[in-house]
Image (cartoon, rainbow, N blue to C red; front, side, top):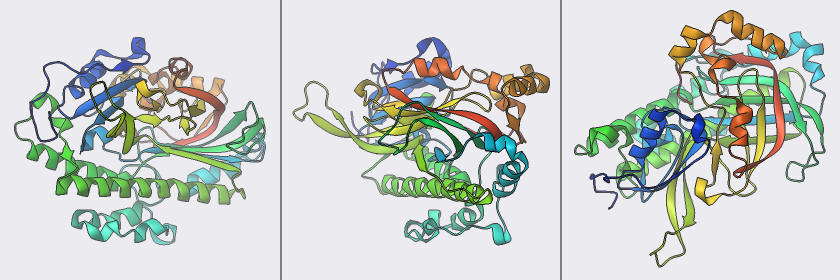
Length: 411
């Protein structure tokens, strides 16, 4: 089979599943469908998996010579950033007004929200040549300027917390101890959404004979002009998402007079060109593939990543072990146990707020659909992937800001 063949396989290729007892049947059905694509060569499903568009969130898919826009996701380059400060986290409680003001004034949440006037940020990403190389991408530059340094809706957040490092770590350049930290989760905002929508629609139009059961997994061969365009646009969205986090962290930290001791960040909605061992029958020992991680954290050997829990549950700084069967990947969070609709119907504000109060967390805005009770237990998710990552440190939320509208967002 090739990148130009629309005939799907009769049966899915085999793939490994982590935390299978925590994964719903529809997510498995979506992953099975992805593994029937003629371009698929390997796959893996992480323990935080739940239903997404096309590929399940928590799905990892390696393809040959082609990229799938919806396997990257509608929020291209959604990512985590952790800034660690050489100060006690007790400071947040002692100066709660100052730290709350920093989050309220220096962050902006919600679908379509944009900065104006003097709050608009400047960054080198706005001078990236890719904006002028692709006409469609160029039409998004004004939106990028408006939304630079903002966060989305749904599960996106910026939060203060306590970071605990149990052992001295040479890679971080830090000694064991407890530190104040700032953690954020968001992506490429309207820019990434428009790129994903445009190129996914184009991919579907270019594969009119593709089985309807996998139409959202329509792909663009990298030899095609359209595939090359999407790849450039995706990588630009990645740089834009990174710039968003950089500006948010710089502004919030400056508002309380801090500079970071260490910073860790990683994409978890992206595609990478990576080298994997070739299967039996190949003359080469290795081959280059396109690895889509949709809601999955890169976990190559020695690679640092951040896996958050919920607004009131801990997150973890991890170091990848480079497990080939998982395609060098790990989960990107706890994963939803309840859909947004189910959470809104079954969880009360009183229940959510009691959960927060018991853990000493101050919430500055979020929908009920983001309640901790809507998520899988992060400790169980981390335990299910002990062969994929080592835990380096633990982040415990103290003060959390999210979008209060409860708007839908895909991870």
